Image: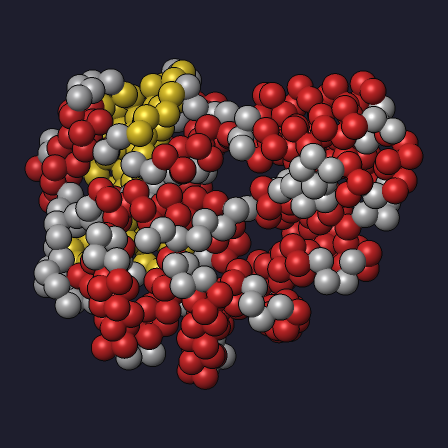
Length: 471
């Protein structure tokens, strides 16, 4: 069983909804009068298809060809702006969509997509304005309704967000994304136990619409666990595993619930399936809903180790590439490695990396002795319990005098070295981390407490770790 992969708001909005494939009669009448050519309509359809499939170079060439004909100019500007943002050229993307809106101001989709870009750039007030304008043009616009709720939540305007999520769900109770995100909101910002109980209702409703929604299944199990209903949490994972015995997700979560013995690290197939399914909504969930700041904390840990020399850098477990833009200026060569193909595809779009490798981290390190000056690892080693193998491999892969920096979730206990938590991630004690690094021959070990993400509305205790390889 695979999760219903939720595409990002931008990607959903380039789906072929407004232009029916092979049927120019679906174009609005004013566009047909201006275009008067099936060939031009077909070019836009083809460009949108290539864009949706991730073939950005080909799509851009076709959008620019449309601009040269001056046919369908607002559409070409709109989607070219989306594409520019996906390439990391957000200001250019904003300018292109603003021009599209200036030419044809009465359309909701471009305004909603302009809001999406502002949202992903952290300009939440501008994003809110765009979504509200889109909703004035089309009061039931599903993307604008949902993303307005998201940006209100990100601005900590929680009561307004609560209302906005409720309006979104009321518009269409079968909308899986709406039910799921309202459940997430209630779990992240509970006023009382009743909110978490209500979240169970919304996660269950999301599963009625899409029985194979991995995110909703996992969230339902977590909500049960948060309510102290451990047996029901385990029941979710048992039922899931019985229906799909080859799926590694429920198998891992049964270990996290203490039903089966915890492995020394998460299995490769668990990591692949979890993050392949999570890739489309990864940045939104972490940055907007969980306050994720591990990449910034890692870069902060390097500030005392500033050097004018360009470095060969490994982004270990790079995911969608959130560390890439932050470290690029220091890198002579930047390599990303990850087990998830879908995450690597997102990282590729950022355009920061010289090389992206689909490999297991420890194996990658073991095959590259003294290959790097710096290894960064944001929230990847939380899927390792026993840190000895991967840290020893990192110490051998980093050159003498080089550095490693990584984040972990903190286990505030002296009684054990690490444990698999109900979240499915491992937690480690400070003493254990310091011992592993010292035994691997690393020097200048610094383990600093920090808050790197939220869980159920509360900051999760974390460690930001820095060490040097002996010269």
